Image 1: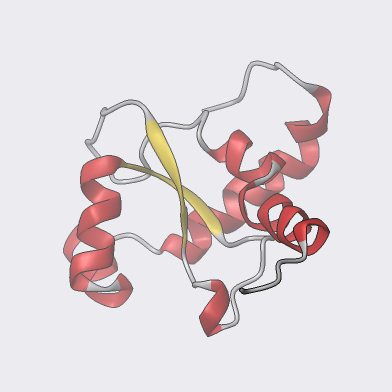
Image 2: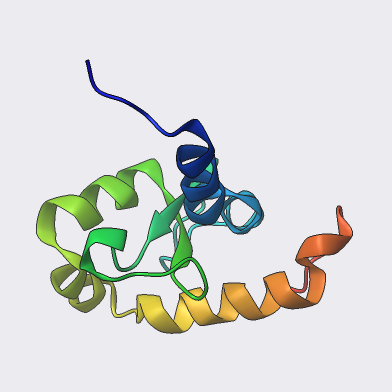
Length: 108
């Protein structure tokens, strides 16, 4: 039987999908011209590849999230002429400014 460390698992979930991910889900899809809702919090760089929580989460609709996984990040960025790291940094900046205050009107 595999042993599990519930506290470690909860801490990792909080780091990966905690307040930053909740905040990112409040944004529209970052792909220009897409107005699909709801959005999902997508990691630009996976944790397995060394991605951290800060400046690593973007908002993508379900269709674009699936596409990102199917064709890869570089192809996805080229196809949609977008830099996901820049978008993640923008969302992180807004999170640092507004994220801990609860419900606010965001400037987008």
